[in-house]
Image (cartoon, rainbow, N blue to C red; front, side, top):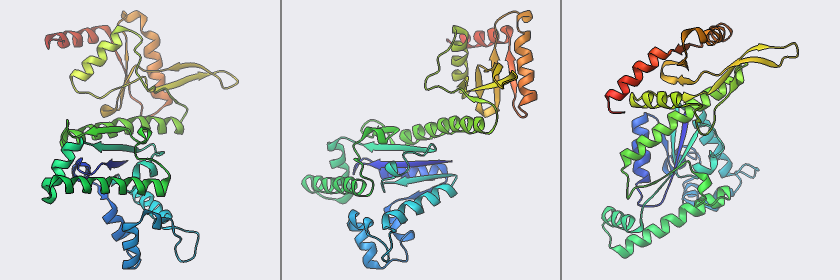
Length: 312
């Protein structure tokens, strides 16, 4: 699952991106209108009006308790997120609220001031001056909301995983990039969670550093065929001493999530790969459901030739 939060400047197409992503992923979209209409449906019309107009009203307590409207908003959003396979949250300070969640992807959408004025002018049928006033008011409102509820500044770069400038990229291109990032983060999280449930070790790094040219070239081949891969994401302990210290372990070179398959490369002659074969078999014995294959020199060279045939 993933929680996708979208912060935006007015006129940047952030609302359009949120709707497009929710449609493409087939998931729910929560914005301020939805939150006020569903999370605070039992409140009076006057209370909902104040929640709409004043961020500070969210800090007021409900029915003389210590429970605030902000607490209710956060609780309701977290409950929906926990019960959803995917969820898009537009505004509402989602970037600050879900920032610490490992399954969250936090997006900011911006555009140049001239572009935003032009879009706003055409959308509402107003002149340039009125469009600029609308932008200033909307941006100030977004910023006040996040500051009042979460004591964060929307301009903080650390709040976001990706920032899109829709002067340069379309909503569709933004959505494709977001979904690609969601998939990558879910793969990393899956490996991390798996290692917490057994004796394997999370071996993922921020940057894949290949040990040799063979591995780097193999990664290029996988990319050419649009096969997603992870480099040495997990280490499998195989033998331990009397004190429980790991004495033998195996870290396959590549993991292909789509095929749930680990690959270990070897360009050495057959007689030198006996140890790797033994380790691969032992991994599959000790960790049921784990598939490991050895890619031999002849297999790799065949792939290289196919790669060169495509001009690589």
